Structure formats: structure tokens, C-alpha cells
Length: 440
Ligand code: FES
Image 1 (cartoon, rainbow, N blue to C red):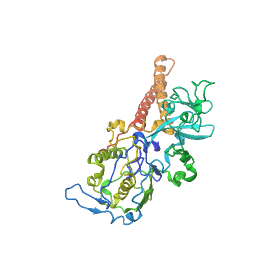
Image 2: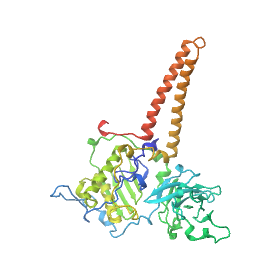
Image 3: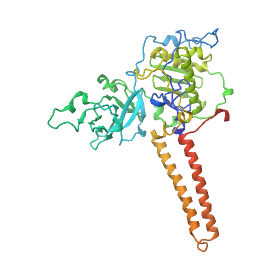
Image 4: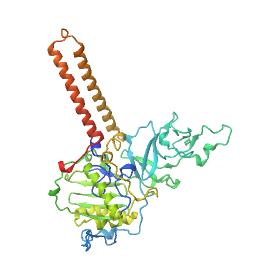
């Protein structure tokens, strides 16, 4: 449930926090998976001197060089971050994967299928397109030999991506299944911290990339004591000046120091907060506000971020640091491999935007089983209620005493009321939970 509370609107909303609705001690993964992207596709800064502007016509210019004296010294201005050959990309916690079926995911604009290769006892990540006629392999199945089988015409692939069977191929004909074009593109993958990672590039030269580079090691993820979620209401007006500064920024991310701890951005997927005291809480409302905010930034033009925003205090240092990294090393935007335009899709209705069921519960094994169990309890309570009333109605007064009848009726009422309360609880926690700052 904690994970559920922390999840429905995912990470990025960067520089303020990350991937979940609370500030937490654990590292966060910046989610570039399909529907939960809160990061705009294009950001930019307008000047190398990194100045901050007001929106008025006569700009007040404040240089952040005063607050981040080391910033420019550490930068490597001409490097570019390659989103598809620089970093391992987290896909999903393995506890949320079912070994019996293939799982379709979209990460960084890439359609991938994740499946368990029982012959190699490892998770595989393939391009989610059958080489035959491009049907999604995630719609297929794992056959009894442990091969990934396409649902459409039954082609079967082993864990190396080799085609092992084309049912339509004549037995005495050429071995077309051995042709290179019959193979599926395979991504390097590995498991670390019980999370599945993949290298978002199928070029064979990265086949053994794990020998040269491993996913970032995050000791906090292996330490249960640091898994505690933080949460408290924030008194906005009770805010105070924060000493925050970016001490190092390069193509690999940035390191930030703050009086409450610090932050580390490991480009491009991990944002890590080290928190000494509890500092606050995010919630869905803030996440939806983040989406609206990004839309406004896009409406003024991604290169005009500084003109639209006024960030004169050190409390914004990490936001500024991230925007700076994005501009300098990624051209101001995520590289979607040319798959998407910079135009943001229409904002869905609030109910859809803040829906928890499809954004989280179906993908989280623990929440999913809790959801099913609670639904079962709700049905059982209703059945008990109806059966109890039925017993009272069908039993003659001489058989059951008045006190017993009262008890059974009472039980029926309690069960019914509990089932109604449970239905509300399930809806509020697993489907949709609105949040209004004004009423808190
Ligand atoms: S599309 Fe996959 S076997 Fe035909």
C-alpha cells in the first residue's frame, strides 16, 4: 500500500523530487515509460551565462554564478549525452513480473517485451516486434519448451533471439528460420537491486556491455532501513530559505548539496535525495500541477523557460541544475529517437490522469493481490449479509428465539455496512483519489 500511495503519478517532475508522491530516502527512477511521462520533450536555456529572468519587459537579471561558483568549472560544454548508448535503463522491479507470460513495456519510446527464459534462468528483453509481420511478441506466450512464441503465426524464439520454429516452413525446404532476418532484436539486460535493467540499444557491439559497465550501484536500495517513506504535511507559508547548490555538473548528471542533505542526479534515469530530517510530502495534486506547469512552459516556448519562471533563490538550485544539464547535454529535450514530436499530447480528464488502477495497481503484484483480496472480502461480506437475512426470513419464530433473530439481523447489517465501507476504501485507494490543497 505504501508503494501504491507513492506511485500513481510517476516520477519526473524533476528537480523538485521524483517518481513518487513523497520525498523519500531511496533513489527514484525517472520514468520515461509511455503514459506517465511528466517531463516535457523540450527544455532549453537561453544563455550560457545562465541568467534568471523575470517576465517583465525590463528584465531583472540575477546570475546564479553567485550561488553556484563551481558550476561552470566542472562542466564539459561540448559533450552530448547519448540516451541510447550511455546508460542502463531501469524497467521494472522483478517482483512485479510474472514468469509465465511475456510483458509488453514502452521505455524511452522503445516497445520492448520482457520474458523469463527458463532455459537460461534469466529475464530477456526483446524488441516487441515479430520479425515476420511485426506483431507484438508481448501478445504471445511462453511455450512448453520455454521459447517465446508469436501469437499470430506461431514463430518461436529462444533466449538469444534466434528463430527456432516457423510452423509454415516446409520441412524439406530451405531452413528459413536460420536466416538472420528471422531473428528478434535483443537488448542486453541484467538484474540489479531486484530491478530489471536493459541497455536501450540492440547493436551487437553492446552485447557484452555488462562486462564494461554496470547499472548504477545504489546501496540504499539494498538497505531496508532506508526504505521508509517520508510524509508530513507541509506548511507552505512556513517555508524558510534553503542552502542548496549544485557542486558538480557534467554529462553524467549533477551533485547537489543542501542543508537538509543533498541530491544526486545520475543521468538520465536516477534522481537521489539524501534527507537528514523529514522535509515534506508530495501528492497527486502536486503531480497534476506539474503537468499543467510543463504545459505552460511549452506554451511560452521551451527556450523561454527562464523568461517564464523566476527562480531567484537557492531553493531552486537543483531545478536549475537539471534544466541546465538537459540543455547542455541533451539539446534541451529527451531524445526519443525521432519517434515523437515535441508537442505534448492533450491533457486527459482529471479522473484519468489520477487513475491509480491502470497506472499502478495492474502492474504491481503486491497491490494487485491486495486489490483482489479486498474485493473478495467485500463479496463475502455481502453474501453473509444476504444469507443472514434469508435465514431470518425463512426460519419460523418458534425455531429461532427473538434474541437470536436480532443478532443475525444485526450481523447482516454490520456486514452490509462493512462491505459498503470496503467498496469505498477500494475505490479511494486503488482507483481514484482526488486531492485538493484548499480543503486540507
Ligand atoms: S507476425 Fe509473428 S509469426 Fe507472423
